[in-house]
Length: 328
Image 1: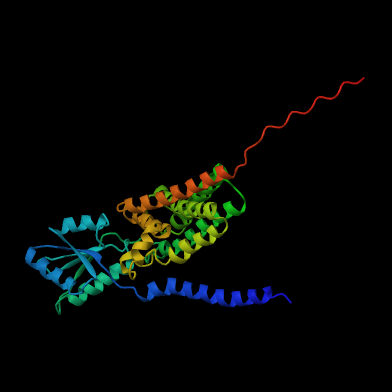
Image 2: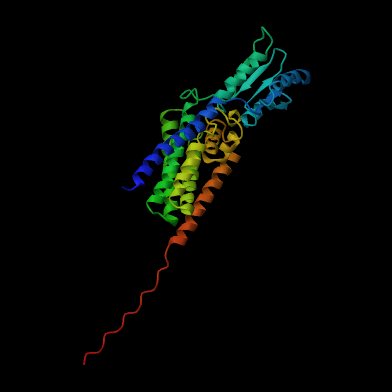
């Protein structure tokens, strides 16, 4: 009896637990180790009072990256430009906390708790939300929930283009068309129907389309270079690593180790940051994520087009048929 079936049984028994353990590590580890790590925040006000506020934050070693600003106006500008997540302004009536739940509801809550804990007993800290979330999605759940569907859509687009045998310009047209339609459809659902987004409609559609294009073209490019295994590698990179490291549900600075930085180099994380910028901040802070997505899309598309040219066989000219012999 052939030993192949037995090897297949053993392979399934070993491979599935390994995949499950890897997925659990990828998704559960960041969630269980969420904490501020060099989280950029601002401090503003008179020098003496601002120094005291800064010292309180620096007591949490490695947790906060404190930026000093001259006054409240400068701190507000830094928050709206996505330089810092929030700021504490020292004033005669006590400290005032400026937050932006649009940047991260989790960070906004963390700052509120931290400032309240540092305030002297009996002191009330005033708070102002400079970038609130829309009433249709007061917790920001729609943007967080959009990361995984976008990743799956991009991987599916790259996989289908490969499995259907599309090459060159046809593959590029399919990937671009699918990305644009996904972006328009997702914006119609999240913005027009649910009211979860309140930015410029076409900017949101463009951000979603570029994210799906970067994902799909990256997977198709890997498949063009490596064959069918490239689909699995792309899915592993974009879904199993890119999704939990995106920081969409919290913030990149709350993820453990280098995971937050790595996530912003991958399309899911860069796409979430770009979407947050165009949806809540009028495009402020979008440059790096826009460049990251464009590079992924360009590299993937280049691989698809180059591989498509190499696989097109050269057409030989048909041989001339011999003329029939004259009839005697």
